Image (tube, rainbow, N blue to C red; front, side, top):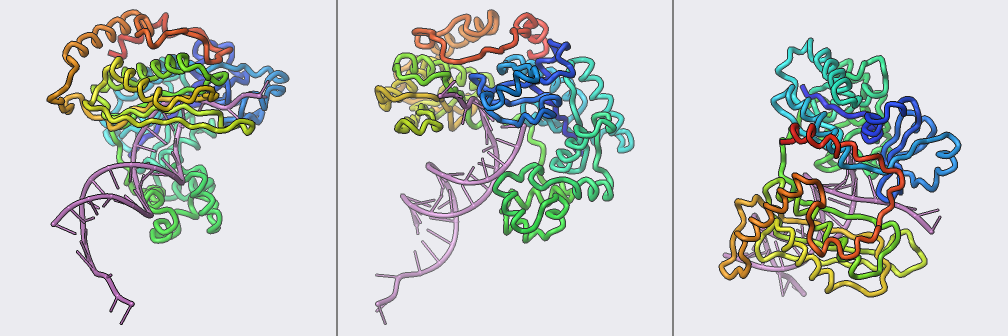
Length: 420
DNA sequence: TCTGGGGTCCTAGGACCC
DNA sequence: TCTGGGGTCCTAGGACCC
């Protein structure tokens, strides 16, 4: 049996951990530049605020109902996520963190008749220990566990845990579950299924394998099997990331080359740090910048360069120099760049890096310097020491009017114990 | 005026091989 | 008129997830 633990309204719940006075009030967390709503409390959902809606479109509602808005604070959410995950990890031998607020874990070491009570205790422990409310779904496949978790979240009577164990439970759960809400069924698949007269998960599960495969290919067949209770999507533990991205939309478009280069340098540094954390190196680097796709009054411009590195690397200085050289080849003076980003690709373990016989750089020396810089960062916080290219002007380019204080900076010592 | 960020997997089709 | 067959690898783009 699988369990899926899902944090309720995660980003909002994180903000509430440090602001208990906001319990019972409508609260939302916003995307970058305070653009869109990305997390909503139940009270905000009840007001009809939709996921992903731009803030400016609901401004009057926010003011009228006293909705509390937060800019996103990802270092806070990351820290609280780590605490929730580390507690769950202690209760299982097989564990997969699926996203910042969700994880799958195997519970076969618990007797079947005690699994529900076991998970209920876990829900209470995490609520008490971390302050985050979670819901758990239990079933024989990951897709059914996701279905169960939605029921657990929806009906308070379940006390946070719902299981799909018997055939009756499965049929009942799927018969009133909308097909578009099934894990793996997106917009396109839903449209195809609706056209075929299918609106519930049960109707889909009761069609033939040939039908599922014919309409939705391999991913659709897997979902179909999982809805019938077959376990075909296995838990994948700690996979190494195959690509690492850092990108941002700017509050106002940037035309200045130097300012854009400063942003790209910071994106590179952020990606490279993640690369080193997982002990890997990138063989390719992709840089892009473009105008706002929402502007119909200006000509669209999309700049992009793919660089294949002579030797795979995770060195910040080196990645920045390749990224900026690529950017300079494609930069168009005068263009209104609204968004830019850096992607690292073809990622390999650092032990698999193949040296170049004619390599002019002293990689040993560069690595030693990098380790010292990382060490200073770890001890003294982010941006304690950075490269010149990362701070030419340090002009503000993002908008975060509603950011909560950096609670976890003060909590650094407590949190570091858990992290290492 | 204002519209997020970071991932994975699958498939079709082209290039290339014998 | 008529022009093989089978395989692998790579890439771009689509669909999906949170």
